[in-house]
Length: 214
Image (cartoon, one colour):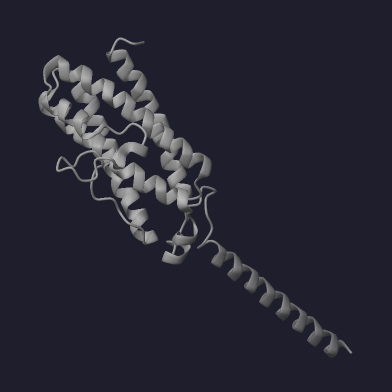
């Protein structure tokens, strides 16, 4: 009788140990695919299928629209290096360039992972007459004529024109980012939209102060 009880007890302990091992294994496998609440993976990188399933059409529109929007801001910032007379304007232009260039690379990476087209040109910047109307539905974008005027300006005239145009440009970016926050699905894209709103709203206030509007 004692021998039988011992066998039953050892068998039960064996089942318990096996169950615990399975639970631990399951917990370990969950850790490779969990997220931090923002839609981004915390350990093992997401597969192409996972990435494709984590976004919606709005995320694609956001990236495809914000890339050329940022590219135009970089073009304007490049002009400021040689044409601006104000140290404040040159410093602002440098900060815009440092912030937005990496964001272009990030958004391009998303589109490539999703199998979507990565914009290669800036609407309104084709002086050959092609694509200059593409910016009509993109808030804050300058057209080719605006960019020509800025290119021809210098000194304090450039400073005023640059700040005025960049305020409008930033306001458009904030509007686009707000749409992404409201309708987007991809966590990193929504986080970037939040960063854009925060940074560019502050820069709008700074530029308005330089223009003497606040």
